[in-house]
Image 1 (cartoon, rainbow, N blue to C red):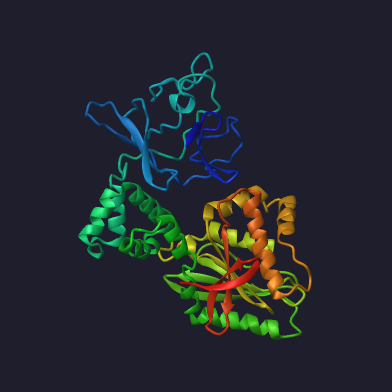
Image 2: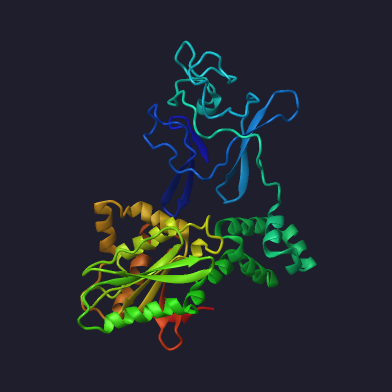
Length: 426
């Protein structure tokens, strides 16, 4: 992560295969030119600056907490003294008055900016003399002092660990840090049972073990829900109605741990399902005249569910709960996100929000009319594999499932010798 002097933003760059993901966060005032981003673009990764007096001598410093590239709590500290002022904001200058409250002059006689936060100590800068809304507070947590193994222990519960398991975590700090990062990204209630199972046999590769456990996360919870399965049955009835030519759908929400559905009538070629808030996914049908598999628009809708699910406000939901379901005459299918960074990388690269980007996306998931169910399934899985090859990705970001009508359980669909085969979830 680095600071861009032209825009006043902190920029984080992550490589996924041949794609670079660029996250722009915690921008200062951009009205002076910069790169033209709106105020408060990105945001959310940094806490407020905290002014403190370490030696009690009236010479204060400023720190702030943030989430680093590993998803772990960290902090930044300014390398120069700041005024001991509750209303002081290290991001900005003296608001164009000559009685500067800063240890530098943001509007000197030469027109240069000597603000060391913005330009490293001199030279023209694009930030303006505007006080931001990020007012400094003198209270708050500056840094999480917990070690990685303590974060893991707090999550899984010390009483659930044997003394040898606690010792193992302490003596394997790299793996403990990976676990702590997974807890931050996926939430404790998701990771706790997986970590406890891993600690029963630590001979596994942690990343592979966790990925395998998360592939089917939340699927059985959905199929155990009566409202959810009733909604699927309703869509099947629409499919069986030879006079039905419209798409129909349901929004699926998780409110306080309870799954609920909301029917949404559609049109001849689409159904508009909401996303955001407590909605964790949706289900819809493709009537006889439509393709019997997920379209590019359906995949982009899955991304919208992922982007907008309010996990911060919903303690019972994680990104791993997000899904999309399609019912056709060939069966009922589900897609879930296998890797969020890779999925985001593909979406950013193809940019379905752009007309030509969506056209390119559609071309990658186009199907031959009157194809068999096997051909539809194989084409979808092959299209995902081609994306993996095209962008040199370590794996495909989406998992495909199909409902077993005998057991009423979703099973993974994978290619074995170029043919789609179902594999039960563990």
